[in-house]
Length: 171
Ligand code: ZN
Image (cartoon, rainbow, N blue to C red):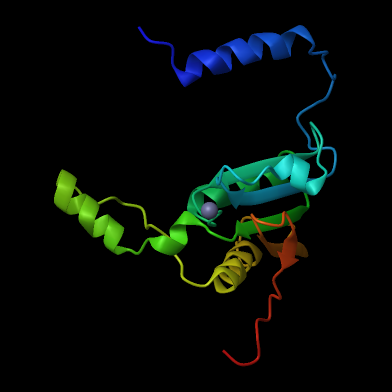
């Protein structure tokens, strides 16, 4: 069998474990924050936000979209593991900007089955961040919705730009 990328990861883990010292932490994030972000490979959340091991929950999917499953994770994060703040991060050049719900239709034509999930594609980054903030703030399952903020990460500068939840006055 040819060596795969997974084999490389396993080798890297063995080296990691050699220097690893048990930090003695419990599962509650030290800084009480959950970060929901796109899975994009160019977004190194810990480096970009100054986060260290044990600081936060990171919940990632294609687009950083607030799906039912993200609400599930946030609910456990807040109710079981004590987080109170939520940070939402989308980014420039996101793959979801290039997709439409037509993707589901194409899938159905190809495999004969329509996916139960929405693609959750978007054309306006800021508007989708705002919609994500609303989904978090209005979830009946989340006890802490006072500190929910949304951002767009620029993959070319590394800078976060905060999205005004109220949105522009003229669109
Ligand atoms: Zn993305």
